Image (cartoon, rainbow, N blue to C red; front, top):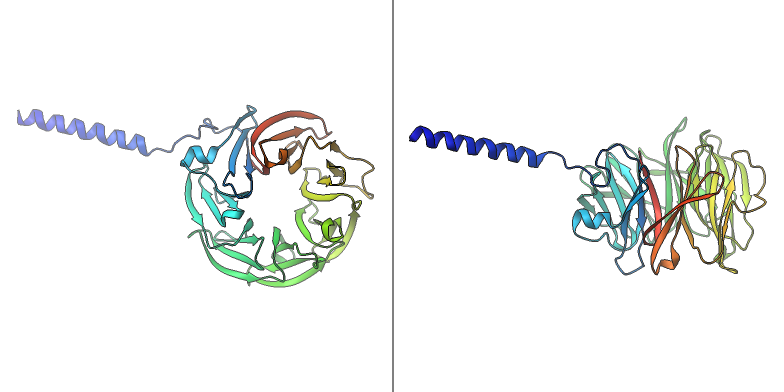
Length: 359
């Protein structure tokens, strides 16, 4: 009998151990169970002040959209205004502007950390394996983040409040971060040395109030600037970061307020605009060889569509444009071919604005 009891206990322990091992195995992502699909993450800002920000995921292989992904994974909401999404070291960093925080999740969107102590964060850019910089809407600082501890460790004093997009460039001048300071007095791009965490240059551009920045395949930078409410005409500037010289620039008609900038795989640039006098929205396309302002819109819509966010698929040049629908209802994500033909539309959540392609 003693031997029988011992054997039974052994079997129970064995199966219990096996069950535990199965439970600790990595869980599959229900949105991409096979792991071979391309995904497009969509950050929905939500309606300001209502904590209705959310995350949507579009499976580009199946054309299926899943909304409220973060809530499904964590049983809690994102917060107030999801400004941007960035992937660093196989983790997602969701910058939640009006909640003054950054949510850190794994690739299954399960929360693993919250970075706090930030004032209206906007964008996050990794500058090394262990550090990242974060821009701010209402502070004249760039925050330095420890990516291991997921905490703010220092700040960099900037010239003005409101820093927007940032771009890390590794070239002959070293590893430098180019920062858009969005004040109407600013007609330059601020250059930071990411080793010393110091401002090392202020490079003139063709317009005022820079906000968006992208890099072309030849290493030149393209900066979108302007603030029509303060009579600063919107301008797109091509800048050589080695010589600090303006290569080319395009000024927009004064009735157009520019919003977002994206670059495609063939170095084509897209800019979303709105004409508040007619409440009409559109997208201008600048080819890589453009020498003059486009003669017409690439995509043009009436007030029934509120163009807001924009991104380009780096693999095939397809254009994704979000329709905020006035932030009063579920918005849409519209897919256009590289020739401007609408091919697909998905219903997202309130205020879709930011995109991140996951390959």
